[in-house]
Image (cartoon, rainbow over all chains, first blue to last red; front, side, top):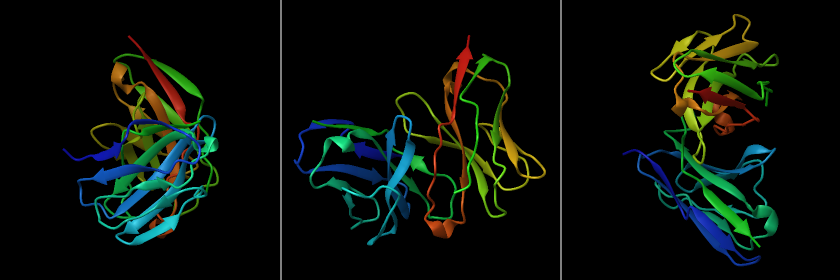
Length: 113
Length: 112
């Protein structure tokens, strides 16, 4: 089954403790991205990757890092999480940047205390 | 990014058609119109997209006004599983990174 898989689905952590949210897709997609969803603000893009070893900032990249060492994986790294990064995170992928259909993961609900 | 305007919420009866409107008066000639939906506790899901002509797929139809300043997503027979937030999104030319800019969307409630 074609899918985007995020882990973990739920995470509670403390301020400053580094964490990684993993994202994997099994569709051989070139384009992957991360969004965060907050009440009243909608979904906002954090980072995106056009292909392996090619990443770029989205609209709200501060406090986040990403890497794209292999095509299927696009982890989101929070080096020093803060409470304002408490949010619902979604990973998405599409065949390439010109294809309109994006596939989203189930989401990761992160709480930073 | 060009802005879209959608009603906050709509209600429909099961088995009846639903017309979800979207206004995008500042749309540019290269903007594609996309619709996504987000079911409760799930990630967004692609529904349909178009540029100028009306489009149909297995999920829905998209009717685009001749001047492209508005569009309507049509669900031909609403079911309880169609209850979701529906987002109308304009997307720039692909070289801008395929970013999707989600607004508040329309909450669709379906009554049995």
